[in-house]
Image (cartoon, rainbow, N blue to C red; front, top):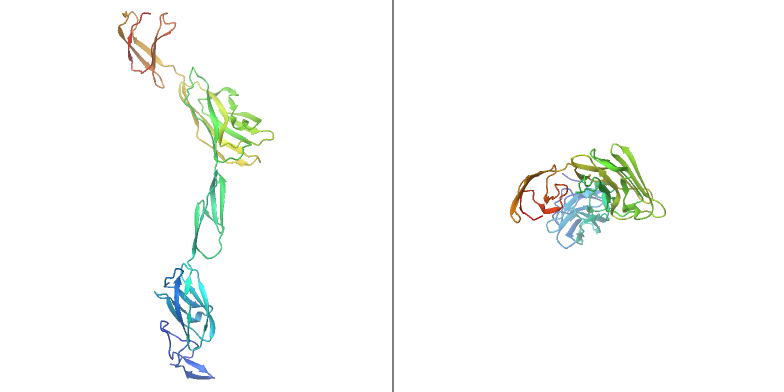
Amino acid sequence: MEVLHERCAGLDVHKKTVVACVRLARDGKVVPATDNMPLEKGDKVMTRDGNALAGAVVTILGNSQFGQTVSRANGAYDLAVNGARLLTVNFAATGFLPAQRQVQVPWQGFVSVPDVALVPLDTQVTTITANAGYFIQDVLVDGSSIGAVSSYTFPAVTANHTIHANFSLVGGVIAAGSTSTYICPSNPCVVLPVNLARSYSNAVLAFSVKIQLSPNLALCSGTSSISEGSFLSSSGATLFNVIDNGGGAYTVDGSIVGASCGPTALAGNLFNVAVASSDPGGSGSITVTSTKLKDCSNAPLPASAGPAGTVPIDNQAPSVTVTAPNGGEVWLIGTTQSITWTAGDNTGVANVDLDYSTDGGATYPHVIATGIANSGSYAATALNN
């Protein structure tokens, strides 16, 4: 079977020459082609560090009819083409930038292409760091969100890309502080602070905070029991206002007036709340239910409510019974005598003071012992008074 075709068909491209694989048309006649056909004889495809690169695909740009070949383990390659023309050889490998070389291929011969070193694709890592007081809200790569990540790797960079990060202020926290001081008959009114803590230093122009007292608490003296703190007032003249919303709920507003804008401190006392209770015991709480902060442009600053502040309550008097001496005893001076008692309280008895009276119980000016454990017994020395 005779084949009329401009190129070799079914070539073994690992051979250096091809003999009589087709019949050529010359001067309008078909004649046998017994001479060597043009064959491109390759040198090597290398990596940038000089090592042979196997598996690189070698093609002729714009001439898919010539097919392709692949570089061997030593980086060498061969490819048969039509001769007598200028061709562009294309080299491509996964993970590398492509490369091209132009060669003039002769008729019935071969040409050697200089070694080609393919450059590996760059992997670009972008690290994203928020300034103090800010957090990463979202990151967009080429216009698409990838979430709030702190780094992104652009793999195999062959084209331009964009990365855009959105940042937001870390919100401040406004919360009532807790206290260990009891509301009790000897201390019926206890003050709890409402404070701001934040990580950004933008100047604060104003605040509006809503609080809720637990049902067992009440303001000691109406809305005047909510007094301004030092946070805003430390920066100049202020306006301070309290609104009773009913049901133990209050709105507390404060703002800077005059030329100055406001404080930049990271923490401070916004206001204080003095509370009382008639409950016999337990604890009460003040909860911040709503927060607003404004900057010097009257734009909102991020802030949220923190945990509730608590105050212990103990309005129930302790019960104490002295079981010895119980009246009528005679103690000799200098002798050791046992004083016994029982004591209880709804919040517990931390310690006991022992005093005695010489006026029939009207007063107890004489100290026997103070701050002793509630053991129920104490060895005392009888005194001459």
